[in-house]
Image 1 (cartoon, rainbow, N blue to C red):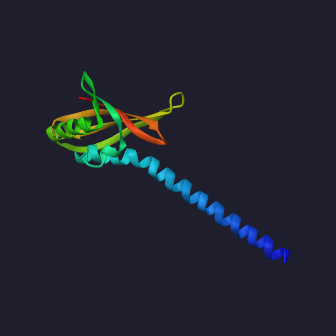
Image 2: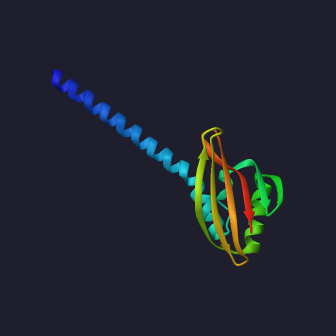
Image 3: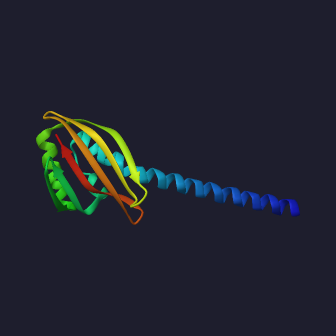
Length: 139
């Protein structure tokens, strides 16, 4: 009787740990989804799925001109810019994070019919999700 109770307890613990591991893995995959979605949007020149990962306001920089836009305005401006320069490929080059303010960044090259643009992405965390706060394009 005691052996069956111990065995039963071990099975319950094993199931519990398995569920926790699956939840952690799922959370980690979702956490990385913001970067792959935005990279794909830049590569294909299509911002349809990008809006989910933008903050309420976004700082956009094109060369030396910087302005802050609402999420909706930013998506229209980014889409118009991508339509104009006709992206061919986006290659991430560097990524990192700041421990002091819990931000992440990504730097990459956007290859277009209009030349190569260096792209800087800055992500902030809100409610456990990383959101794009700043996007810079430099030729």
